[in-house]
Amino acid sequence: MIGIADSGSTKTEWCFLNEAGEEKRVVTGGLNPYMADKKQIRDCLEKDLYPFINNEKVKYLFFYGSGCASGEKRLVLSLELEDFFRHADISVESDLLGASIALCGRRAGMVGILGTGAATCYYDGENIQQKVPSLGFVLGDEGSGARIGAHFLADYLRGGMPEELRKEFAPLCPLPLHEIIDTVYHGKDTGRFLGEMAAFASGRYQYPYVRDVLKEEFGHFFQKQVLPYGKAVENGLNLLGSVAFHAESILRETAQQYGIAIQNLLKAPMDGLIAHFKPQIKDLLRQTDFDEDMD
Image (cartoon, rainbow, N blue to C red; front, side, top):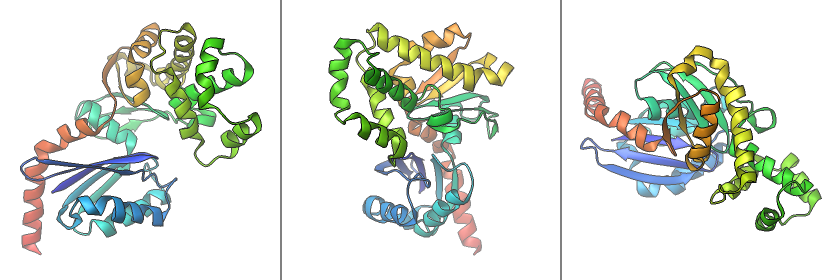
């Protein structure tokens, strides 16, 4: 059996496939190593995942997650995964590489993520070769849910949001001003807090104000995180993420203004990752059996 995981800060989607290609999907809490410590990671694996899967039978695990690009934090997660999946060959890589594989497979292309956060890269069909730093929602993450949510929130607090929309936005923001400021600047999960504000756009795309906010933020995304790649963008951009998926028409309209063609667009990577790895299952498991016979 092989496992594939797509992990963010709030949830992890797992898919386990046997040699026949049959799927078992499980959703657990997020395993971003910058958000979850060693104990939280272990608890997630043992309490949320273990009841649904026989970890002893997993021979390969391909894990793609936020916070997994490099460094000591990724090592902490890798060690916990190795301890849980004791008989598995484990690969832990960034969510951006996972998005690239899901969108492009073995084809080279420009790739972007537009969800709570935002990121872009040039993918050569195997590895990420070039990446403009996303910098997080304070310094960057242009076009992300966090930045869109921050735009809505600031307009609401300053009176820049149309009155009819202010009344609908109010339930999302029941806190007094000083508590909102404290949450934004000192909260533990500000990105998620602001990202939830971005969901306000859903079902309200007919309002000029909402469309203008999205176009402005998407414009910043293309200017800061896409156009710097130069000629690499000429063959189009592949995108993944809830923000890109739900605001697709406005995103495509804005992209066209910058001379950018959007190619593949997915809400989440799992189906694309399964399509990539499923043809490899028999060869992977055959190689594992061969290695075991040699031990």
